[in-house]
Every structure is written in C-alpha cells, then in structure tokens.
Length: 408
Image (cartoon, rainbow, N blue to C red; front, top):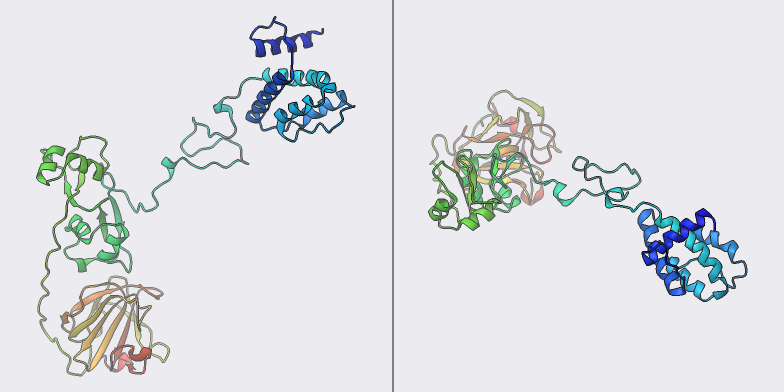
C-alpha cells in the first residue's frame, strides 16, 4: 500500500471508528452515511457540484447498467450504487478517496463563510464579495421620519420644520398625536394655532401627553406622583432604560394634556366694511406685478419675498381661510377669501400662512397672511382676485374683474 493510500485509510478509520489502527468494512449503509456527510460539507464549503466526483468514478465502472449521474445528491448516489453491487467495490474506493480529501480540509467557520458580513468591519460594511448583496441588520435601518435632532437625552422627541400647507392639525395627525399635545409642547413658539408659519421649528413628542423639563429636584417617582401616573408608564412613554433622569431632560408625561386655550377674536377696529371705491394694495413693502389680468388669468400677481405681509384690501368678513382642497380655486394653496358686504369679494392665494379664521371680521389694511408659493405656484407671489359675485360661482370666471380697476 502506498504512503498516500495509507494516509487515506488511516483518515477514514479515524473518522468512522475514532481509531486509526482498527480495520473497517465499508457496507452500503455506512457508505450512504458517509456520502451524506460529504455532501453537507461540500455545500457548506462552497456549494460545489458533485459532478467531478462522478467523472472520477465513471472510468472505474464502465459496465454499470445505469447512468451514474447523482441526480439526488451523494446520498441518493450511494443508494443507486447499492442497486449496482457489481460496482460497489470500485465506486467505494473512489468515494473513499473523495471522503478523505474533503475531511482533510480545514473546517469552515462562520467567520470564513462568504455569506456572512465581517463582524469586525464598521456598521453597514460588508465582506468584499461584489456579487453577493447583504441587507443591513434591523438596528441599522434609520428612521425615515426623523426630521431633525431631538433634544439631548430626550428619547423619542424630534424637531419638525413647518413647510407650506402645514397646519397644527395636519402636523399633529402626521405624527399621530393630538393637537393639544403638540400645542402645549410648543406654547412658547406657538402663541396660538394661527401663528404657525413656514420655517417654524416645532418639538414633536413621541406620544400624547404633557411635555415637561426635568429639574434637579425631580425623580421619576415624584413626577409619577405629581402627574398621577406610574413610573413604569413614564419609562415606556419615554423609552427610558431605567429610572435615572437628569436635569434639563425633556420628558412626556403620559396623561391627558389640558384643553386648548379659548382665543377671543378682537373686534374689528377701523374700516371694517366696504361701501365702494378704491381698494388697498394687498402687499405691504416692495413688490412688482409679475403677471397681469387676462381671460386665462383672472387676477394680478404681486411678486414679493416669502413672508411679506398680506393685508385685506378692504374691510369685510372672512369666508374662507386655509388650504383650498375642493371647489373652485383649487391650486391656490393656502388662501383667504373676504366678503365685502356682498358687493365685492377678494381672494388672496399662494400664501405661506393665514392669520385669520372663517367668520372673523377684518378691517382694511389688517394683516391676513404672508406671501408664499403654496399650491400651483412658481416662485413666491400673491395671486390677487376681485369678484363681483361669490368667487368661482358655477365654476367659471364670468364675474371676475381686473383688480387694477379697483387699485389706486
């Protein structure tokens, strides 16, 4: 027996009997078990085909009455050999060589597997196999709704910057909290619900409740007693790992927030009704007319910087204020419509914010909003309309008038 053959035999004896000197006999059952082990090891190593081993055995069994292709893997291949006992001795020898070669290779560890990211790499980095794609673990999927850095040490809080078309109600709904929760968390930034404006940064609590700032005297137990809740509820609402809190930390107390304050609208002061005559220019400060009145554009456009004050052209009653989502005038974004004693109507479109409410009486020159570019607008401007009937009656512009005929 050659030295190479002796090494193979000793390796097989160690594998099967744990004793390299003990004789072994390869029967069909043992051959099948070994074959299944070989198949598993091959798949773990590199998912190689077993075809090379079949080609190795084919010359040794030329009289085999059936093809030797291992359609079902090596385990099935061993079963097929059992039905061809005349070639078992020859095939077994070839398989013995293959088994010994496979088990002589070093074991494959998880760290060496080409299907596992390198644990020592930076988060999100992958092993250098360009043909294999990996997904980041769940912990690395960033929160796409995060719109800014939250206050230090305040779990779950985040900042949101107001954009065109936002209202307090819309923002609260977007983050699944109540208007009261949002308002009281921002009462220093938001004196009233109508004072929202583009660019304003609002603090967004993680859940409904009362936002408060921890003082040096506060403990989780004292806060739970003060707000009539439990320490566990506070920990869950704020994602706290333990009961330790620090001064200036912002927490939400998971209790019902107070009701919104009642805002009394001031009575109209000044020229609060329109009796005819010239209207005021509705844009305060610098502006230029960027588009004039025409049959396809029943208005004039005052180009001005976003945030430029917009005032009522005459005294009257607000009949629409907010985002125009239905009926005539859609595309105007945030709008304000004013009824001037049923004789004249003016509309103010593409505002960045409105400062009045439906039903409110306003005086000529009173600020009602700010220039913006909400809705179907290109660049910041005020789209100003004048009507001698209710705007967009029957969906047409038959009673729209050229605003320049009413301006000084």
